[in-house]
Amino acid sequence: MESKKQTVCIVGLGYVGLPLAVQCALKGYEVYGLENDTEKNEIINSGKSPIKEEFLEINIPKINLTATSDPSVIKKSDVVIVCVPTPVDETFMPDLTPVKIATQTIVENLNPGQLVIIESTINPGVCEEVVEPIFAEAGLIVGKDYELSHCPERINPGDPKWNVTNIPRVVGSFTEQGLKTSVTFYENVIDAPIMPMKSVREAEATKIMENSFRDINLAFVNELAKSFDKLGIDVTDVIKGASTKPFAFMPHWPGCGVGGHCIPVDPYYLIERAKASGFDHEFLKIARKVNNSMPEYTVELMQDALNKVKMPLNGTNVGLLGISYKANVADLRESPALKIIKYLKRHMANVLIFDPNTEKHSTEKSLEELLEKSDALILATDHKEFKEIDPALFKKHGIKAIVDGRNCLNKKAIEDLGIIYKGIGR
Ligand code: SAJ
Picture 1 (tube, helix red, strand yellow):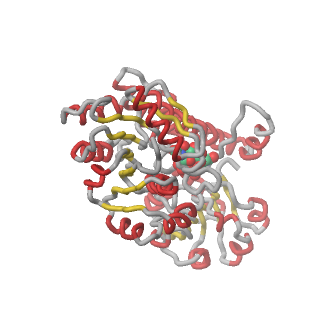
Picture 2 (cartoon, rainbow, N blue to C red):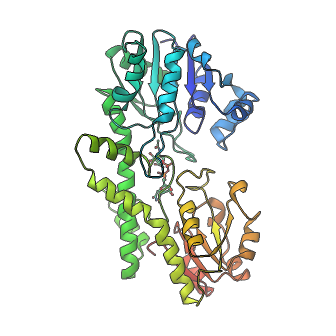
Picture 3 (cartoon, helix red, strand yellow):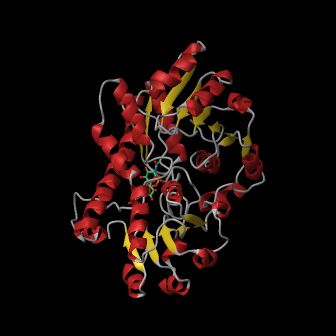
């Protein structure tokens, strides 16, 4: 497939779709972004990025990318790629509604012979049991009227090294031709190896496995943190010690919880689909339970810390350092901080928030303002701004106790100032 004369339509211009759209444009494709958020479309069409991400801010002004909410652009495209969210609801049940709507929109605007690729994270079986049937319902035959592939996204927001241009990918398809065309397309777009999988189901399973791998490893160190807290062992030192082993060990770090649109979500897609086939993923469920327990554990640590200075949570001003789900991004999806706020309020604490990446979710305009008004602090996100705080500032503002939810503050310096410090497992 010659990249010069091909047209690509990306459905969904979020953290996954927008970088991909930009990269396709940089590689010479004619690119349409199909996005419901017209405000976002206006920002993009004016040459700006709606997301604080260097790759986007540098490249969007340079490329020709048409962002629109008009689905007829699908008809003009040779390749259409679905990059819509695959969330879970409040009972952790997978919600494929966005994928189903996107698929139906493609069916209604199909360009015969089109290559349709799903990048959204989905469990094994979704392409064959959910997506393909929507095409079949309209009398469209995969391999004849269109090709259908799955190439799971691997975006890591905020990562300075790995981005859409250089992350290797896997791809699976319904037919040999579909696989060949998909691999050629991604080899044109991405400067990294593209691994063809033997089936679309294997490609779906790959992404779910890699993210479940991360979730269970996070649960492992989170459980160790709770155990070592009682044994007076600093779990971060032990992880550093274990990391001196040059093989067969991969460090993960305990924290106040596991957030984001991937790690705490993807395992549920496999848990639910496997259940339908009669298999119970006990291990994945326990890992989810451990990680989901960390926000409440963090608030319990706050209670213990305040007890040391004879202060109840009730009525205490607790400042939250950070609300987004991980360092240096402004994304609150499944953020542990949101659950920490819920538990603090349940204990009648007054919650103040400052996050330098998202003013609209901050109650205080600055770090100083937060410190001035707070009696105690919980660090929920290890933004770079927080790692640089001089502990003397905590003393100056009369902070009595600190729970370091990302183990990123200087424990000794804080304790030497007479402030109660509790980390997660340290
Ligand atoms: N977290 C910890 N301890 C750690 C690492 C992360 O508590 O050692 C927490 C983070 O604070 C966050 C959550 O886990 O709340 C998820 O963190 P993450 O670094 O996994 O960030 P994500 O959600 O952006 O994960 C992305 C994922 N990319 C895709 O799904 C395509 C994931 O697959 C990557 O493994 C991950 O980036 C990465 O490696 O950084």
